[in-house]
Figure 1 (cartoon, rainbow, N blue to C red):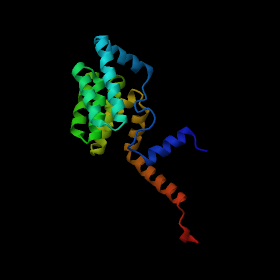
Figure 2 (figure 1 turned 120 degrees about the vertical axis):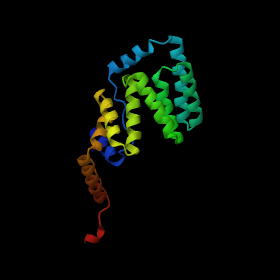
Figure 3 (figure 1 turned 90 degrees about the vertical axis):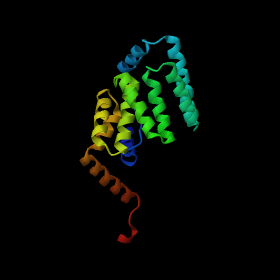
Figure 4 (figure 1 turned 180 degrees about the vertical axis):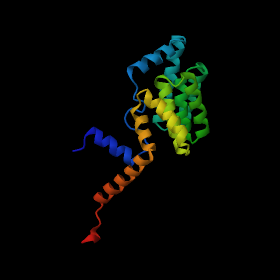
Length: 188
């Protein structure tokens, strides 16, 4: 029987670029930090921005990425100095294939949040993944390390995967498991 940890390891091996579990792995103190950041804005505007973001998330979940981008953009127009909507819009832009726009929003989210709290940590993780896919492993490692330092388990796992020895080991393990699942009948 497979333990939850075993399942997480196997998922990381076979789907190394796909987040699993809580992408941010945030601690309670980070949630309080987000509340502190939001307290600098009028409460009614924060609530309206959150509602717009929720509408955007729901639209993205149903595949309506264009509406999602629109709702996140409305939240940004409402509170342009709040990081959360930039982080969310970056995800939607990436789904549209606009990686350049996604990186711009992630850069802005990291700048506004100073890389702290839930939005900052998620922006660092997202930016790290995009940089990794673009082949900039060193910049990806820096962002993922900052997110890992905040407690993101996903970022910690991605850092392990960026280790060349871990990648080789994962590749060998993946090949071995595949061979066990599909034994070569010609051996007999």
